[in-house]
Image (tube, rainbow, N blue to C red):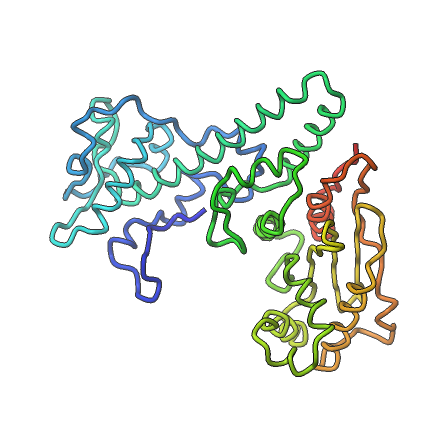
Length: 385
């Protein structure tokens, strides 16, 4: 979740006000939930305070909230956890006013909605506006999940299959790191315009789209970055279905096109990292037969090409040929294959949960879970039901 003020022009350096609106890094873990927190843990968390009661109409304007006095010396970041949130419309108006003020020099924010409460620091740092905005986003994400889970709970009453589905969902949400990318996060490899497009797919038997998979991979990447004990660094790459499909397409194209067409830029960049030793492994989700997701892992030094299919299928011929073509192509460019084992003998089974015959929709979650388990074995494979 972004904790920085909005910057419209990324080509220029941030203004002093934009910098002042950034939540200090040491404070973020105090006032906001950690990015590694799972959906289930977020639902149980009480770190975000509730909204304030109905606001006095006089406080709907920005003037009562902005002050030229420096922040109160008694203020501590922990104080925010006990302060109700002002309405989001007021927060956004105050943020806009701060970013557009030209002559005045605001120094602090007044918690105008709490002015009648004793013991509340009157003048707060400017970055509190960004915190309030972020806190509202967290509340919205948490409420969406809570509402959806309540809906799922009601829909499973009296159904053994439904109870099993809900149990499996809860296991998914125990591993799935929360992130407001569920509402559209530009830092992710994909951005969803509305949470309503996303939540039902995770909660029902709707098929996940490529955007959902990219979203899950982005969250998995961040989750792994918080687990230093597994040695996750930039030397590992997670790629989505589009990248795997691009490799398949490139394997059928001419060498000249693969070297020069812009649509293959990502492949050439990943090849460069592989050959240069910057990337040790590539894990990804493949979309096969126009209706199914599977997991693929390439570890060159271990001469390992893992493939996991929750329907227990073998790697399709075109995908198999494409991956072997790509490995051979990278070796031609100087990639150390780690021995004399023929690359067609690298293919091995990647552990993955098998779907029951009556489950025709969970393969996307299971493919991502297989990658999660591969890179962090302490995170178990999901149980079939």
